[in-house]
Length: 169
Image (cartoon, rainbow, N blue to C red; front, side, top):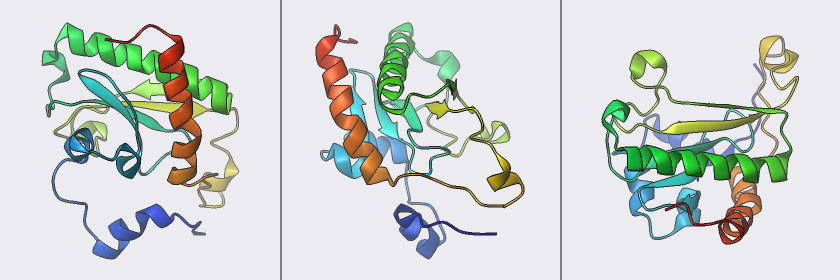
């Protein structure tokens, strides 16, 4: 297997374990959005970069409140998450020009959830051929840009989109 540099994963690899506590709760409480790659904040939920992206622009939308129970979430929360999803789609379309999107939740460990106790929605831009021979035959995954670059490119677009549209809450 060929490995491509992903410097933001160094602490995870060196420590051999995940950080303690909930990544979404830490990001929700953060005073420095850039340190946690938080791109946008609503009243009940927020948008952040996936620290271990499947593809560039892989975002997540999470509620501030720690809960694994999406089925018990309020309509107000799910409506805000839907509005944030629409904002993510607009911003990602403007910057990356993807040919499609995968959006969804992995609820529970058996469904593939990496963070089981705090539900969140994934937003992944997709392009025809992005699942090509590299990971299948070459056993290599290519990520085109680091998280800092992605954050620097997307954060102003979220701010601009917020200013050009009615507030989401």
